[in-house]
Length: 532
Image (cartoon, rainbow, N blue to C red; front, top):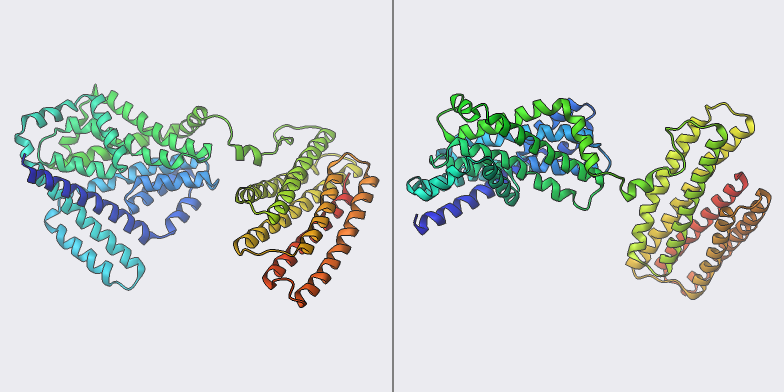
């Protein structure tokens, strides 16, 4: 094999892979965000999820892109692992369309296809037609690249060493290993399959060897979803693992069946006399059969993934109710105690968020800022869960005083959530102040320190185990001071603005901070008055 053939092989491979990527990207852009909406909204039923997986993957010609989107949805909490398994099964069927497309053997008109795509991509006025032109151009490049690869590999038919190497892949272990490694490197089973089809068209690799390599392609394509799940939630990792398990189980089943039934001969009898078509049909058979066989065990597959990656994510634990257990029926007093403990936990998180937001107002810290917003999500979620639980608990048999106490905790939870909102507003002000390099006058800082000190004392009084009358007295006194001093700060700030001692933009930021502190103290005062 001369160097010219080797250069042509590399050029053909580059053109083929580029065409595959261009076609997939063009189709994905042409479809737009509708695909993501379809995946997110139409997966309530398991069989719908499979159908969505087939359609979306068939449109964008990439099972990897589909599974990466699914992993992302699971990580964002928009979809559970059971829905994800259905889409993954469908994606494995949808990806077979690419192999069938490559097997059409229309290399002779590939340049014309590429030219049509170029014209559409360059001169179309509508964006969607431009993207469609990109996809058509990619399809043309794909077939042109495949033709180059086939021509370059033609001499290999007469090279005994290469023919001997290809027959070694009739060993299931070697074949699956080779297919897995190739696809893991390329990160596209469709591209790997197309390359194999180009090799097979030269008659240098029998279908018996191709069969095990194709099985390996399906395992190797999981690398994309695995990589996308790294650093994600445990459920996202479980989704990627379910994808791996699905293809490994399918491969094991087919290897066992191949020991007793000549799968390659069956495919040969029902395919055109074209190696590329035979490989495409084998790939289709594998994915359809594996999906149909494993559909009844889909929930077990998801459960196995959960078993292999046990436990909860840190965020999932933080978001969970730690003292309230909705699944355990308790008497009213025990339930009331659980709610009280959860409210105290919520108050502690709100307190921490407030103090951090005031800290970064003076000296901005990016990590603290992100922590505040992370905890704000927890505050909102806990308020929602606590409120829902209290509303359900009110249906229990209880006297009027107990019922009133539950309602009080419902109002306290909502007040604390609003305190959290205003603490977040202070954090936003702090970020704006840092980004625009704004600063306050020394007098303004002194006023804020004083207001902050009173607010912290209010939070401390709420967290301490004090008699209600004493708590209300302490918090109310500090609230009156904050309310009075905020007005005083506003008036003095206005005078500084008139005398141009304060930058106007800094002044606006300062005013927002005063408003947030005023509202925080107001909600804390209301909380003290309705506390139990």
